[in-house]
Image (cartoon, rainbow, N blue to C red):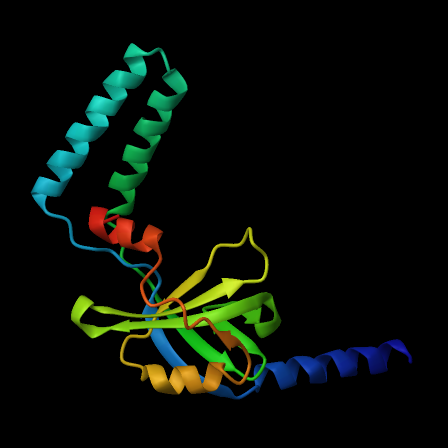
Length: 175
């Protein structure tokens, strides 16, 4: 095959991918920012100060530096608004913003729907143990419709009935 035909074949494949039909699409915030009160900042600052004093007392200056950097990052990130990200389920995989994930990369999916607790999330676990799970809020989407579409491509983790512990702790601490 000559160079011109190769380029035409590549362009037609790219056009097919660009025109791939989305089975379901919705928009979510890039990250969750729980509201923090003045009291939260006072308690967090006091705890950080105690840990910083302990780190200096034990001559663990690297730990002290890490505490200071974490505090600076926390303060700087507070003013940022979450961008809106488009989520699309296609026949080939998941599109999250500009990132595409093939269904083959995932081990399973789970939907945790607990309206009284305000939890309505979709979770994707990767095949690769070292990759962190993806959590996507379902917002106003019907969880049964999402489940119906994904069950054609992935196994559902029916054992997951609650959000992961790390997410529960993060919500509790408002991080």
